[in-house]
Image 1 (cartoon, rainbow, N blue to C red):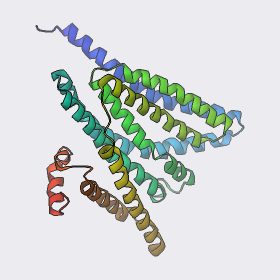
Image 2: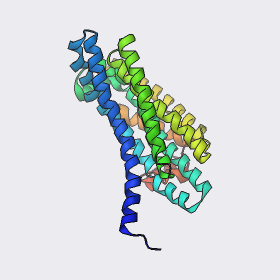
Image 3: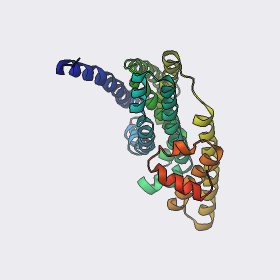
Image 4: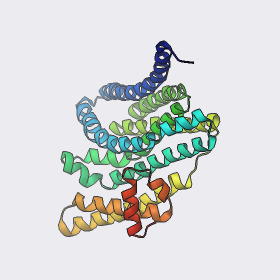
Length: 305
C-alpha cells in the first residue's frame, strides 16, 4: 500500500529523535564538565587555574582530538546504510559482515591516530598553538580517547541502523551518570584538576563502548572479531609509533628541531605497509576505502598485496 505523508513524517521523527538525544547527551557531558570543574576548583581555592586549564583543554586538546575522531567515524558510518539494507532484507551474514567492516575501518584509522597524537604531541602542539606543557601532557594521557570515542560512536550508529534506536540513548544516559560520579571523585578527592576531566571523559567513552558491545551481542548475537579489527591495527600502530619516535629523537638531536612534514610521511608509510603485510586489511576491503583503486594499484607496485 502507499504510505501517507503523515505516516512517513512520523517514521522520520521517531527515527531522528533518538539520534538527536544520544548526540545531545554527548554534548551535555561537555557542559557538565565545565560547570563541575569550575565549581570544584573554586571550592578548593584554585580559582586562578580555572580559565587557564579549561582553555587548554577545550582550545588545544579537544580541538586536535576531534579531527581523527570525525575521520574515523565517517569511514565507519559510511557502511551503515548498507547495514540497514541487509537488516531489511533479512541477510544475517551480510549484517555481520557490515558490522565487522564498520568497526574495523573505524579502528584502522582511530588506533594509529591515537598513537600518532601521543608520540607527536610534543612537536605538533607547539607548532600549532605555541609551547604548552599542560597541553602536551594531557594529549599524551588522553590520546586513547580517539579510539574509545570512535568505537562508541560507530557502535551507536550500528545499533540505530539495526532498528535499536533507543538503546544508545539509554547507554549514553547511564554513561553520563558514571562520568559525573567519576569526575567528582577525581576533582574533589584526588584534586587532579584538568587531568581528572580528561580521565572522566575517557571513562564516559569506555562505558559507552562496553554497554554497546554487550547490546550488539545480546540483541544481534554478534561476536566481535578481535584479531584483524583490534590486535593487528594496534600492533602495526605500536611499531609505527616506535619508528616515528626514533625518527623524532634523531631529528631533534642532529638538527635541533623536529620537522613534522618529515615525520608524518614516515608515520603513514610504515603503518600502511604493515597493515597490508600483516593482513589486517585485504585487497577487497582496501577497495572500499576512499580512492581504494588507486591505493590498490600503489600497493601492487610495491608488492604489498
